[in-house]
View: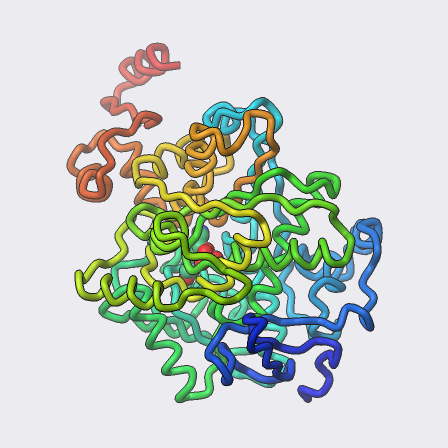
Length: 469
Ligand code: F0G
């Protein structure tokens, strides 16, 4: 397909206002060639004239037999208008749920009806990544790519592999750190037929390699340095607003790994405010795992800020130099966010600026306890996702979040992604617990639901049921 059919009302632009270099929408790039900064997809809203009210989007649901109206990403097409309708690639992503959870509200310390879980585990590949993959795929197809690659802690790769196998448009090449990805995710990549390259190293090693390989071989890169990915991820926030009858909540709480989500959410709110579709921007809380806390260290401890685009890069460089000198590597049970060098750091700083944001870190103990509370409420999630709930609880305890505020925690990935962590938490086998969780500082499983071992004998089985139920 000819690239000239992509919208001429959209372009790519360096995120740093002082540079502001622009590039065509048909170009494949992950950074600004003038200054090395990240890129945004930007729009000529004056000429595009997006809808002035949300009712326009609501009406699309009545036309949901049209895949572009059914998709939870593309029914907001007018807010990410970089491709023509016939170019859009969708597999039905974004049919997600905003669930008011009383149990989790109580756990977090919020009044009833104030805590919402945005359950992105309902996506076709079981995580929020499908929102972004659908957008990246749309761009990739439009520019004629035949192979797509990513480095991943597992969910991006599962999503890429799924889009490749469902659409047959591209061949998937995925880079993972060996032993660094949860079984549910590895199973998906293998089952969907992706070329799976296991690197001896972690996510950051895989990320560095995939960028080299995609440059050398001209393979389309779908990691979140790709600005089109993040356009799709903006729609998570549109659906949150939809679930709240278009009233912005007080807080959005999201786990922070490579910082694509937080960056996309900030962009979404900045644009919605600019377009007059919201009159208030929610506050953003980004939650690191304590074992992978680069953003927390830099933002909360060292005071790094967006600063109108004048980010103090020397602070970041010094931080990484020291990290390398100490050979400090990320380590957390929340393998999805076990990342040392978040590629979207600068964009995330901008989002924190837009949304008057805060950053916190939570321990693996807090993550696993919060995860058990989410699971007990019926919408299970993987460990990384529960960082949002643990973070909301921490911010509530600090008094930063008030008891009456409306808080949305984004549950980024499905419970079944990482059964090993879940079973280890609930197990009666102390050795199994220690091997996975004890060594990461998890001391107890306060909310464990332990299996009851019973001999294969009817009387004994019935006795156990009477005793425990
Ligand atoms: N939650 C889950 C379940 C994830 O898989 C990821 C990232 C994050 C949170 C962090 O999101 O990067 O936008 O800050 N997973 C990536 C992957 C790195 O490769 O699947 P972020």
